Image 1 (cartoon, protein in one colour):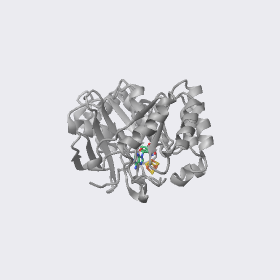
Image 2 (spheres, rainbow, N blue to C red):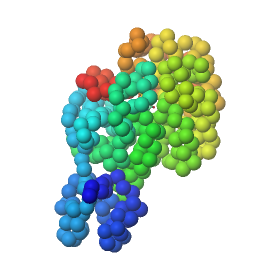
Image 3 (cartoon, helix red, strand yellow):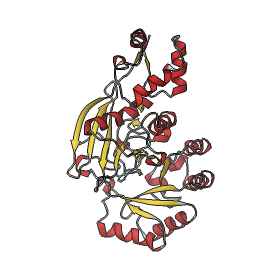
Image 4 (cartoon, rainbow, N blue to C red):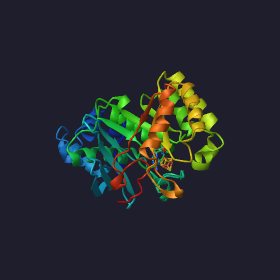
Length: 341
Ligand code: SAH
Ligand code: SF4
């Protein structure tokens, strides 16, 4: 019989488990704490449990670990870790300390590869090899914190994959990261990003999830967005914007739009005008990201080009930020995660 993986299970699920092996319900909390706060990898470390129970757990359950296979350090302080999540399936996660050091972000992957193949993203060129389980997501955080010897202050689901194609595992991981009994990170310090999977966004709204939410808009024109993002054909921009607005109205929270700046594709005056119109239609902010990859004959904008586009938005009083994705030299910046470097 295959052993049950306990890491990544919430307390109600762990309660079901302990009851199923004839133990008292309160053991669930002890297991949860050992797995997600003490970061134990062996049942022998659970010294608060009787030896007989530890032996029983050893027989029926396991605490697997994703394996570090590569660690790269950028000149700017960013680090990229490659992990084997099992069966030689590889994912990457990134440690991003801010310049002044007060913010330390871990960018986690949610899938092995990505099915969506956006025209600008290197992850989309990889074969898709499946969804990550909750434990495989939180283990990225545990192991990176251990490797760098520091705690993260922020987690972003912006690594490999489309988080909203793996809703259950991603949202469960976010809850464990948020839970004061586990990682204890504020909900506003956890950000989930999507290219626009409308049914999953609706579910997120319906469940009133407390986490920050970002939509990769990337093009403001309904007839053109689909030429760089396949997902737009299934979930078109106009419907996506309606759902985004619903998010802000139902949850009474600001939403973030990410917008890659690609010269000659989406940085014209007309694009800015449309983007401003979108920004004015709901409570949102815009994160601009200069293109980091150079396939399709596209080039990263110069600092002047990026600033010019940003000025257009700022002049219209749109809350906007230029997200200077660090870690380019180790292929660790946005859109670059493709097992290279
Ligand atoms: N699949 C999700 C989350 C991962 S991508 C999504 O697409 O939202 C995280 C961010 O990186 C997205 O906003 C995406 O638009 C951006 N990105 C992808 N490729 C990029 C590139 N080549 N340069 C800069 N940003 C990129
Ligand atoms: Fe997938 Fe996001 Fe990359 Fe598009 S940008 S291919 S959705 S990871």
